Length: 338
Image (cartoon, rainbow, N blue to C red; front, side):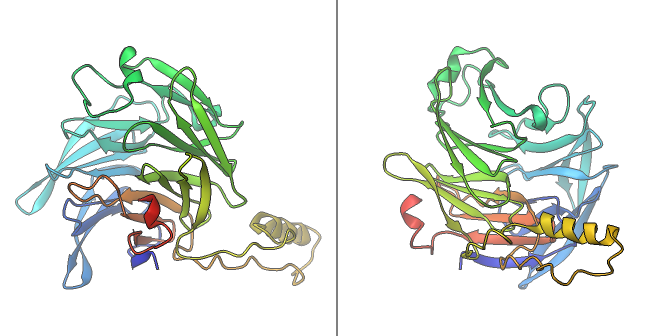
């Protein structure tokens, strides 16, 4: 099985990040705190609790070289945490946002970090993906998409269609040549040669929407979201993307009357109650998804190894309070895409 480790740390987890040596994990238990656990003698023990934010922590990133943690929260602030002696010492970073901070990530040199928020620019309900340039002369020499260097810093490059649905997750491929994004319409989009004339593909699926995606290689993407099981998408030799399978389970397509019908079931029960019906045993309960996660997967984090461009291992966390580690190297049908 692709899942090699499953740990339940809390009732619900908003986001998580790993220490550089992967011996510690930091996560937000859907609160204003960040809990840090260390693996000691095959057992996870809580070693630190970071308490400075006033509202839910929505983003965590742990730098690989400097061993610093940056957090972002709905309280519109960020903290940079430095480990001094036996304690994590916070430094407040005032972001001057008028909306909640939603995500955060260190720069490659770890001397800056970027914060995504709900302020000013584009809401997820704008039904489009907008690409801006953040490349300055002298930076990112290894970035292969040279088209971006013709634009000024912060200039809009292109707007991409999302078929009139909300935007959830966006990721670049390792080379920067392909952009993948997902929305609320149960579709995933792949765009090559991002610019005035991009080459776009879309893959529709019959399951619940994805919240985020991760490139594990140039030819394979993992999508996670409301369906509780990671989904694998891959490109063939011609560059055509398609859905491969689920991780952690192999789902069987259900009949049209019961397929993905949690909402329908709830509606029928509510309608029955409104008609003063005590219970409705005729309504078929939603079947168990049968996967590792039991609720929406809210976060996916790559477990990178030095000197390896692909990401055969990654971790997911969700509203079920679990952190799951996945390994694709022992998956024979997927190894061709790594």
